[in-house]
Amino acid sequence: MPLDHNDHQERIFVASDFQLVNRGFYRTRIWGPARELTAEIGGVSKWTYALTMLYEVDERLYHSIGGFYPLAEIDEVFGQHAERWMRNFLEADESNQAPARYTHLLERLRLIELYCRLIKDQPWASA
Image (cartoon, rainbow, N blue to C red; front, side):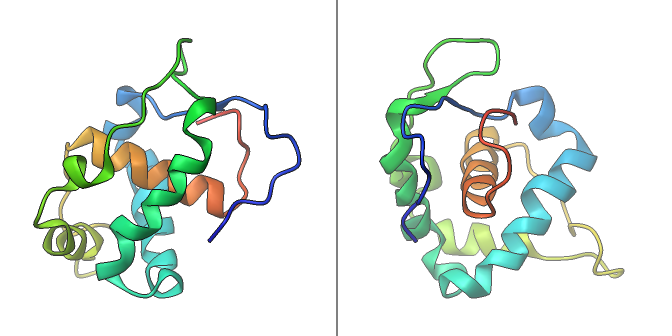
């Protein structure tokens, strides 16, 4: 899914570590949107491919405290068991309203949150 935004010079701030470990943020800004987008991108196996669209905006990524955010290689961040990890990450608890488990693999979470925010056209400049 290519991005279609008017101002290609606008800074995009990535989520902070503090935000990523906050359970409310995790559920509403990462896990929930990722579950919604999984079918749209073609299933769990397509996530790492979908994340490559972040390379289109990598020169505009910044830490919330300032400074350029160097986008990591997606294949390196997710490794060879990405599909299994995504399947486990997206799994819901018995209520189907929350994750079955939480992960603290912050770079994976950061990339997923960023992708979901950009695709869903949420505000660019705040995480």
